[in-house]
Amino acid sequence: MKENLSFPKEISGSLRKDMQFLNQILDVENNFDVVHRVVHIGGKEACMYLIDGFCKDELMQKLLQFFMEITPEQMPADAHEMSKQDIPYVEVDVNSQWETIINALLSGVFLLLVDGFEKALLIDSRTYPARSVQEPDKDKVLRGSKDGFVETIVFNTALIRRRIRSTDLRMKIMNAGKSSKTDIVLCYMDERVDHAFLQEIEEKINNIQVDSLTLNQESLAECLYQRKWYNPFPKFKYTERPDTAAAQILEGNIVILVDNSPSAMIMPVTIFDVLEEADDYYFPPITGTYLRITRFLIAILTYLVTPTFLLLSAETDLIPESFAFIRLKETPNIPLIWQFLILELAIDGLRLAAVNTPNMLSTPLSVMAALVLGEFAVNSGWFSSEVMLYMAFVAIANYTQANYELGYALKFMRILNLILTQLFGLWGYLAGIAVLLISIGTNRTVSRRSYLYPLLPLDWEKLRNRLIRRRLPGAFEPKSKQFCDKI
Image (cartoon, rainbow, N blue to C red; front, side, top):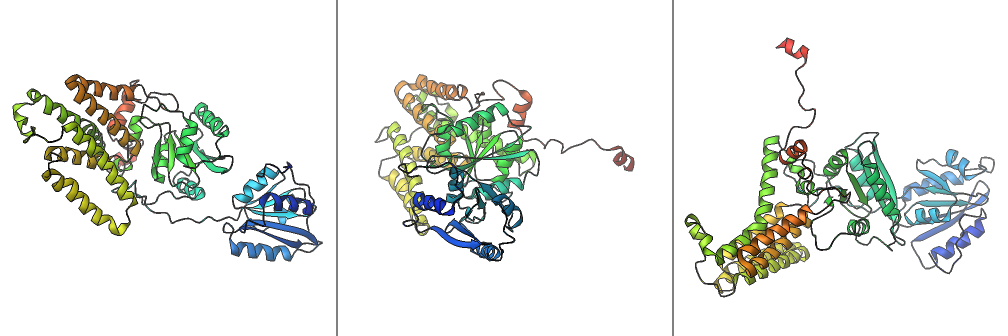
């Protein structure tokens, strides 16, 4: 809004006066995509405003044709009556507040002002440019649905509604950002959600003072929770899968959708929520349990492998005779700690290069990375073959975690352990593990519950469900008497 312009709260009912205000505040002379046109409806002068590219041309043509056929005798007395009997469309609203009207118009809603009407007619005929619903690149599954969220918030809410056909499902829309007015939708089950926590989230969103949510969910997360910078473990879980979001809603969590973002933000989450994936439930219980335990063990190995090798290389007397083969075959030209740190940086460099590499050059990049960081790096004497092997395992194993934040949290803790092990040997190694456990144990969810629940505090029944993939509740029922009689 232009700060030097007086901003009335409500429309005046005088078309000329209201048009003058809108034309000035929207700067229609310089904004080519703000379309306005004066027409006559039922003997009264009217003006329509719309944003080019948001409204459906065919629908606009049919509405204009319908308006032109209204005679003065058929013309309603006010906007409310006209919305009920003279607009052949479903999503029609009336409003007199300029702030609401302008916000709706800039969101793509068709605005109709009629001379003498003290309320504006808002026809939600908008359509947004959107890609098709397809499987997300990040949250892929071996089995299951192949649809994913897109950048249009209405499509995303529909994907959730398709999976939860319950009157208990709530989808409350809000907005944040002084300039962006970004749409935010809170999805939850009214009878299962923690209402105190829900009210807290709503108040925080209403009190957001930022100019815009430039980075969508990440900007919103920074506004909702002031995290401690030294604890990298994620407070939120992100997913691009509607089935995962629907499952979290049914468990009593809150799912937040932000317009222009193809992912959903889930809260509150514990470390066990972050480690779970959809594949755990798309396979039978025994297979799902195996996948879950495998993912958990690999996460531990990605943290322990390189610091443990660094410790054993310095303290060779700790190596059992049966594992004597892991000792270095040759004296390294560069200290092992520097080899590990350089490769940690190089792996992230390759990851960034892969993101920015055109598709037609992705294969040459992979070949060059394999040659330069593989055979040539070892033959040149820069890196030991053992170091390359363990770092290759860590780089590949990181992709078993769909959550990027968790992967980087383990990476930061691993680097810290490497440095402590190099400086203080066995005691530094143990101190690094202690820092990891303290960081997880003292962490809290956004609802201020334990990050390790149901391990701390212990709830054995829920902990067993977290560790072991069990049948869905109600999937197994005792045999009915009629069925027993047939047997």
